Image 1 (cartoon, one colour):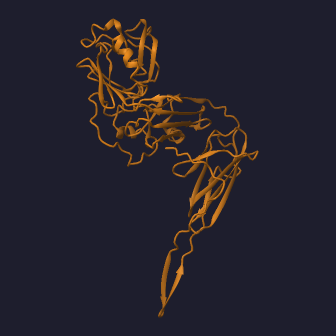
Image 2 (cartoon, one colour):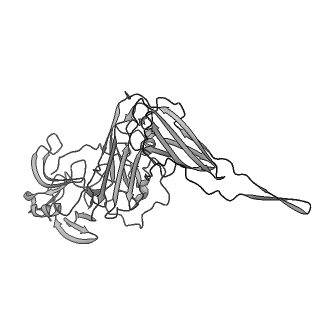
Image 3 (cartoon, one colour):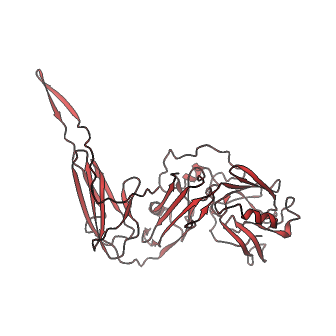
Length: 423
């Protein structure tokens, strides 16, 4: 996680560590000698006088016999450049991408165990604007929104991020939560989508701040990141929906208590709904489903109160034409049909980011077909990280998985193409 810490321009005083004491004897008297603490040292990157440095550069530090107590980064006009420290102390990340073809100076002060301090300076010049193609990134997490407790932070990439470049990209993805709830990133196997969540669902009232700091970042040898993206949102009440194909009923929970049950009609056998644990992705009071050109499609229909569950076009929506079948038969093209009154009520209860579990249908939800971070166990999710995940990061309890949950996550992910097929 990215812990924000404003840079200080001054070194802080650090108490000297107790000196090691050794003893040897010469005759009847003992001579006590004090081992002298090694002086502090620090190696700073970018290297001094480096040129063609990417604008995504950060000030990296490698310290011996001490710790960093101050960092000062300035541009070629002497103006300070705000930056934030990484949680592990390995570097300072500027708040914004550096400018192209500009010179910057970093001064890093280190205090040693002996009480001595040393300062290392480096001056470097950034590269001209890159002519390499940019990887398009999309952050599915909007500023000043209120989300449900299962909302993952989701990033999409076009073209996909190659496996060998994912660690570098992931190091530039920062999430801060208040109160703190550490989490991890996980990549879809094809590199088209990365998702971040904590082991447990977010606590209501949590504030989540996200930065995708990818502008100018070298991605492999042939591409660079497109732009920096930032957003801060909060978590609302805890709402979840359980949809059971056996009973043809949707159970709506708030804070673990049943609010209401609604009869539903799911996808007919030729176009079944997906079983799995998914998240409400979008909400539309009115939208149009256009299935022309799709298998078993060919229709255009206007619908009300539609809530997206998958990229492939599965929604919960008002379907007054199937109200006589709801609770009894499946008649849709993969969507969850509810009555007009039920859909209208549901829109006032749910939030984007609420957990939706569907069970008992003919097909399983595929990884990456929507926001699928909760469709696998925490251990399976953590395996998708390109960087080590702390071993102590575990769910507070081991919940029984939903019967429809995918037990693995190694299946190929479909292309995250936004479809309004519906039905």
